[in-house]
Image (cartoon, rainbow, N blue to C red; front, side, top):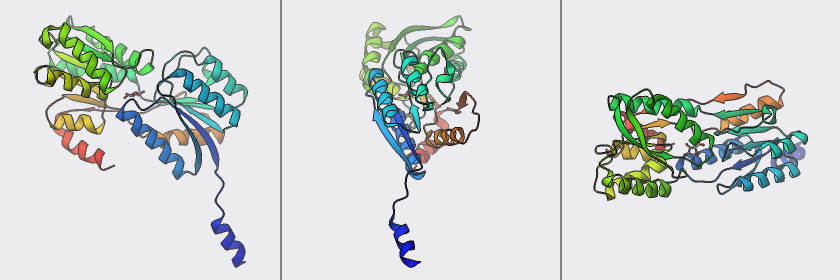
Length: 307
Ligand code: GYE
């Protein structure tokens, strides 16, 4: 009767699922947004999310995974900092019958059945798109400084490859400097400063290709401090589409960004739910991005900062 109904109303609903999420860290604005998306999607779905921040270290991710396995979670979400070195711990998860879902980056494992699926964009395609834009912008004549992402990450390896695929088609385009800024703003600034020094204050650099927006934002600062105008004296293209890069575009400090969807929470939990319901999933659930230019930067900035 009434009493039972009242009791039910105050009894907390037991979580449907317990999911462990091993996140890389918070090196970029993009990653912070992704963490937010996964946390809030879990909350909306009443999923008990065990969150672990690895501070960019694979060993911390391996420890987190082992702890999720020991706790007997229903599923694991892994954003792998680097591509290799996962076979062992993923075998341990498999032995315990805990399915693993990769988000935003990929792994290289001998046995692909060690994970269920990867929810991520196509980094090679992003790199090609960046190269194609720059080739068109410079009529195929440009000396490029490249800011690479984290060494050994699929995002850095594939964005480098896709870009090189296109640049190699143009005899007057070449990468004259290339180094990792670890996907951070401070890393991008530091590496750009050294490029500028090595390249006569930047006079010999036509463009910067940055594997993410945060490093590009750091490079913009370095270029300004060297007395040059970013986006004019040196062209800049990067990847992610975070609010701050649209702001920089509005202010005429950068030329283009390739959007990377950071709201992976819903697609990831949809995949987990489908898998646990017995559905067969594709090995790669691709997220799509577009190339954005200054003409729509204001709109995009307003739209993103009101989200
Ligand atoms: O581009 C970068 C982040 O793995 C796709 O990692 C992700 C990349 C993203 O730190 O900003």
